[in-house]
Image 1 (cartoon, helix red, strand yellow):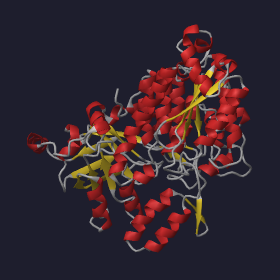
Image 2 (cartoon, rainbow, N blue to C red; image 1 turned 180 degrees about the vertical axis):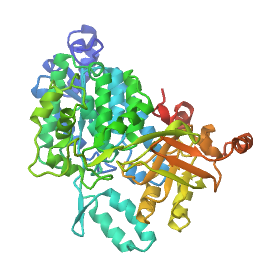
Image 3 (spheres, rainbow, N blue to C red; image 1 turned 90 degrees about the vertical axis):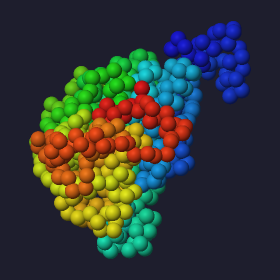
Image 4 (cartoon, helix red, strand yellow; image 1 turned 45 degrees about the horizontal axis):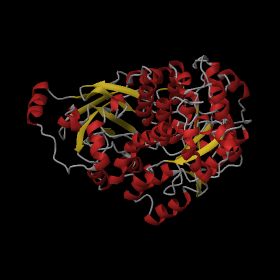
Length: 556
């Protein structure tokens, strides 16, 4: 057990810790419970969104598993911000910031209470990377429990997800659907608890947790409301005790080989652009070498084998029925794309995971590497005169392309969205949205309102969107985010003017502003950072400490 444990042997055996024992007696613990190893259970339950709505029950199931395996569970809670509820509003500025706050809060509880092991119950987007970041810092035996996605909704005879909702707003603006139809879709798109129902950011990060080795394969796949989720959570409690017995710490699990496997999982399952930010942040916390270009290199050679929305047509529940991430691991292992020399938190090897993988008869969700759903290129990393430090293109397995068009420049998401909705953006335009970066936003908002509007208006494949902000995992189309350096810090994106030609070349990995250097120098000399309200509180701290998106937008 931890030498700093405040609730295990340290309390039970130390005469001077009697005052501490008195508080544990007040909680209903007895002397025997105080002598057992303690497992902290960090729940990100919140009643403000469906994503994490089941976490109270799951934490209780984890606690039962811990007790059954001879430990003493101690639960605590931390925050979670809903990306969907805040999307397109000033509230979205809190989303990425919450990753840092969640990680810090879990770390603080771990440091204060000296748990011998930890289980983090996670769901919505930022809770997954935040938990992994905190566990890397604390380095005690730990397990990540992903609470699971919601089931897809049904509307007019087809499966629908939150993706359909956002794209319906664009369809409404061109008269393809009425407001009444949008409202009816809203009543059916999200039928119950769970995270957004396809390979958006939360499910991308859940897959990463599996392939990193901190989450047991086969548990996160189970939808939030499916039968068996509670039993799986109890198993996680037992796994945590097993990890403690083996001293399976994150530092022994989060290796360079494990990180390579996680990158492969993002490429193979058509993951979210947000995974780039989060993988860079996790690598930094774990002391692993990882550069933004490394992610692009993996995506260049690994095809998409899971046909999941938004780049495919299947939902997360479809993947679960087909065989889950274990089946994906089997396909990748068969093709020699995974490193087998890794430690998994439940003690299995990757070969054992693959050998135990089930495959539903006739499933069409997970293909083979030899005959993939789409070719390589889930994501691409671009550099160039408009993004010297890099940016992320959501290629989605589409063929490489070159696009050149006139810039339509906006200094906020709201201004851009209004222009799209009134029909001011046309095919061939390159929409540039700036001052939405980590420091400039602040908070690096997701541009889902914009991408949804473009797709809904039929412009998803004919208008490129370039921003120093980021995108929801729901976003698809010609979307390029995380442009670095950001406008707020004087990056070239701050110098773009309406009508400038912008060139995107995915094969060459380039994003360029086709303006003479002398003209750019004159603009730079005249550039002044736009005035904005002075931030207070947490956003003020964030602006002062946050780094570049090309390094994961971390604050330490």
